[in-house]
Length: 446
Ligand code: SF4
Image 1 (spheres, helix red, strand yellow):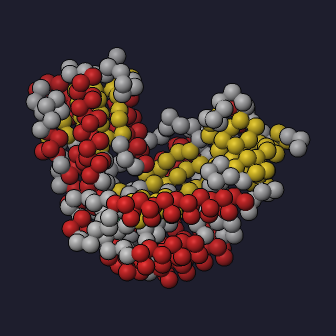
Image 2 (cartoon, rainbow, N blue to C red):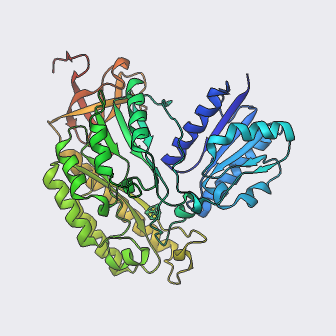
Image 3 (cartoon, helix red, strand yellow):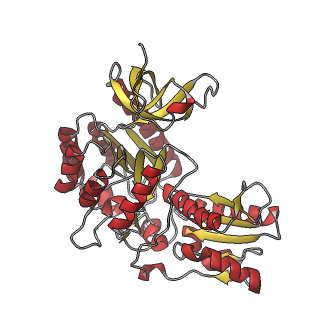
């Protein structure tokens, strides 16, 4: 049996795309082996979000070639899309496919097997207006299923290369999203995470349809217990979206809303489409309709021109927003973006100090958020045995509002909704005690 091995760099969307590519190989009768093993085909799904992403991608390509010089080496993903020539120049690379036409990977592999000629299959992504349908009915991880609903982004934030590697906004057909959701539920998943490059932009390119309408349609999928949106911009939280969040009991009390900077001058230079006041008013509204909602965010520290005063202003704003977690990134120059050409780049050491300050702030906020739930019962879907002590009978999972809980359970609870009482709050994980498994209705004496 022919074998295929994958290595994925970068974000969740890339991991999703790899799953989709694996489905195509699987349907062809391939067996998947570890990337460290000898395989007939190696697929490297690359990332280009930072300059380091390019470098790491090249390293992994070389590693595959070294492992089996006879293997077919296929390079795909964002770096492949933006720099196909650079990749084709690496001796041993047999084919480059960008962020589209992945559905054609099998015929491309077959063509190579016949002709033995390197293939550059990268096409201009900026002209593509159609979402590429790729089926992912199953995942290696059994508890949470990802469902890609859109591709691309029209925003062109000044620090971001993504629109150039992924192209412009394309939404997946509503019927296809629903059909895939039904399939995932039939495969045993209770939670679906809607993902994309600019997930909250879903529907902007479809007439008479919207993200809110999609959420309502998903709400009707029988057997589905939880719907999570991987990320949504403050400006995309419309009144209609608020209405679904308020009325559908499947919508998780957790939203990831990228802030990126807490100062209006920095936001404007980033070309983000909101002010801090607009962002704050959306957050306030969410707290009104969804008490206890967890709001997580991304922040970039040390964007060109960020003075100490702007940074302080940002810190004060973030404290006010009471996020339940912040993902903090130091600004990293991405060649080809307007921000990389800005003159007033911030010193690395200053960036470092600021990053640490925000990580500390995030940890404080994480703890404060979890502490509110001590003594309360939350619904948790256990994902796996607790890594810290695999044989202890402890399991971990996330509540709908994204509190990570560790509690005494059993293997058969994985993937089932469990009611867990929070006994002790922690920064990254809190402790809990099982009350009941909802599916089997087994009651545990406390
Ligand atoms: S919204 Fe901005 S940061 Fe996000 S993908 Fe689009 S351009 Fe990049």
